[in-house]
Image 1 (cartoon, rainbow, N blue to C red):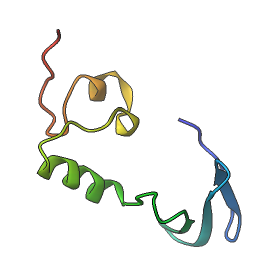
Image 2: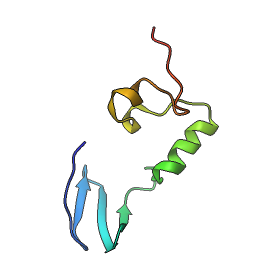
Image 3: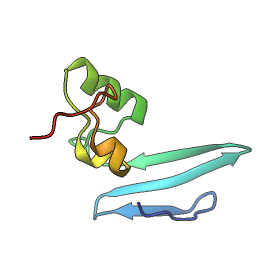
Image 4: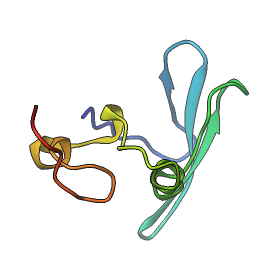
Length: 82
């Protein structure tokens, strides 16, 4: 995982067409603005996982972090090793 430090009104780029802007910081809450093409779905992580859970899917690999997460599905159940 890449960790970056940014201040209010600073941004980062993902590829050539996705921009993340720190809109504001208030105590323990950070407000982000996201500029992305319409064809790129953008969801809060909890919404993203619920969408995949509702579809009966495992969490996509890009959303997993760490070995334990890689060995469990979106419901936290162990994935059978093949």
